[in-house]
Image (cartoon, rainbow, N blue to C red):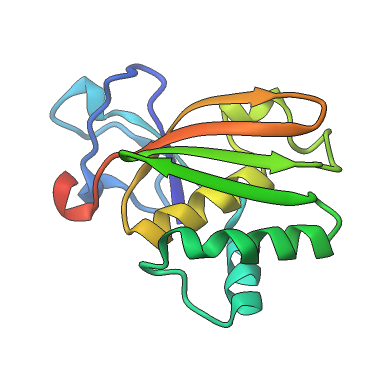
Length: 157
């Protein structure tokens, strides 16, 4: 699983056929808005732990995943809870009691830390849609991520 970052445009376009785990910079594209950086997601291992704990594959699970994520993060001592709310394709994710503030910080708005990344990956898999983050906000007690579903693979092909 990879993360695509378009440093040139907020209004980007994806050519999924050009994105691969072993490619760092997508430059061989027909439009400048398709150029970007590709990173291996930092949250892949945590996603696997969530699925093992839940004893289920998160594919098409939608919001059923929140309790598994909370339980795993709580048992690892990384966060107290995760709440996910959805309305009209918009997502609000609240991560409460993050214990590793050095890991999860304002830098997440650039490249998400393993905790935030794993939650976003879980949602991508659960909805079978690409997820674009709008904002990360930080409070002493919680982190709020606002994101939106931007379509499945067939929408981008």
